[in-house]
Amino acid sequence: MDEIRRDQRVTLMYVSAATVEYVTVIGTAVPDTGAMAKAAHWKDSWASLYEGQRHGCLVRLRDGTGAHRIEVWSGSGSFSQEVTMKRASFVLSVVCLAVASSCAKPPAPQPAPDTKADEAALRAATDTWLKLYNAGDVTAMGASVLDDAIEMRPDGPELVGKSAIVAELGKDFVDNTQAQTATVDEVAAWGDIGMSRGTWQNTSTPKKGAKKAVTAHGKWIVLHKRAADGSWKEWRHMWNQDRSAPPAVK
Figure 1 (cartoon, helix red, strand yellow):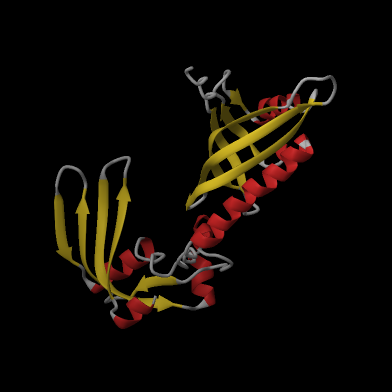
Figure 2 (cartoon, rainbow, N blue to C red):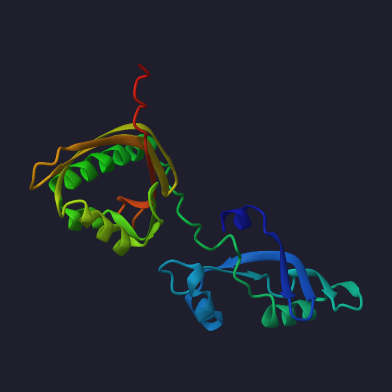
């Protein structure tokens, strides 16, 4: 709108994609702020262009002298002509009342990503997961997993979906207690996608019997997605387990 106030020369184009035809009108425009004029020409289909504005802001060619030139392309050829004052009035009433694209409220600029905050949140997500895992709180761990998550394990088929992942986690605590630690060696975020990776070490201790505790270690990587509430959720998870060191040669 400010641009039109500074320079009232405008070009309007109306296109029919179905018939590959268009009409271009070149002229002088003025903002029309009259409530009655806007209400008379308003179309409800325009409402999505304006946030909270009933009639938006309309731009029209000046009555009588606003349309200076018209070009019509019908598919078989084109022609241009100077518009008489009478013709300009007709064009105004039929096709030249338009919603100027500059009138529509521009979308609010997206805030710059807070990379440091995202990286801190991704590290915190790992800390929270470890606490829940060591406590055996499978239900709470499931809340950090997306419904369409996939876990890729080194010793079995991939687990597809939250339900499968949570069910497999539950097996870890049937006969054993778990004590896991992890390092977070790298985190990164790209918009609503995040990544964290590091190493893990877990000691599994039988709840009954005389079996010894078993300790294993390896590496892990998780891709996260930002949820609607801003929290990071597990989306893809892959881990491996380091091989035991070979026995010393005697």
